[in-house]
Length: 228
Image (cartoon, rainbow, N blue to C red):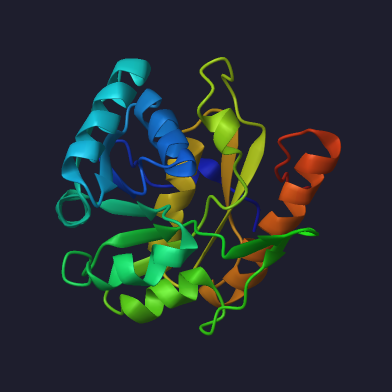
C-alpha cells in the first residue's frame, strides 16, 4: 500500500506536551509544532523553568505555548512527546503512570553513550527506550518517533523546511497515524510507519551513526526513505 498522507487524521486541535521541552531536542520540536499552529505544553521538573522556556518559545514562534511541571503537562496533553535524557527516562515516566492512561506517548529518546571513539548505542534490557516506556506505561499508547532530527536545525528560524522523513513505530495503528500526521505538520517532514515497537531498538541506535556522520562531514544528517 502506497503512503497516503491525505488519509491521515486531522491533528490540528490536539494539545501536544513535551517532556524535556527545555532541552535542545524538545525545545526544537516545540518551536516547530508551535509555528505550525499546534497548542504546545512544555514540561519540566521545575514548573518555573518550564514557564520561562514556554514564554520565550511563544515569543519566537508566535504560537500557543505554555509550561508546567511534568505531571501537569502529562495530564493536560492529548499527545506527549518524551525528549528527556535517557539517564532520567525510566524515573520520569514512572512518576506519570496515572496521568498517561489512554494517552498517546511519543518516545524519541536515544540511549547513547560517548567515549574517545565517539557515540555508541547503550544496551536497554527491554530492547529499546520505547519498549521501556511501554513496560512502565502499560495503559498508554506508546509509539517511537523523531529520533533522527537535528536539534540545531529544528531551532533555527532561518530553516523554513526540514528535508526529513520521520520513522514512526508502534503497535497501535491509530496512534501511529496521529504521530505521522503531527510530523507532517512541520514543512518538509513526512511521517512513515516503520513497523512495530519491537523494532525501535535499531532506529534509536542508528542515531549514533548519524552523529558520527555529522562530525565527519560537518553536517546535520537525517533520513529520506526511497520508493515510498
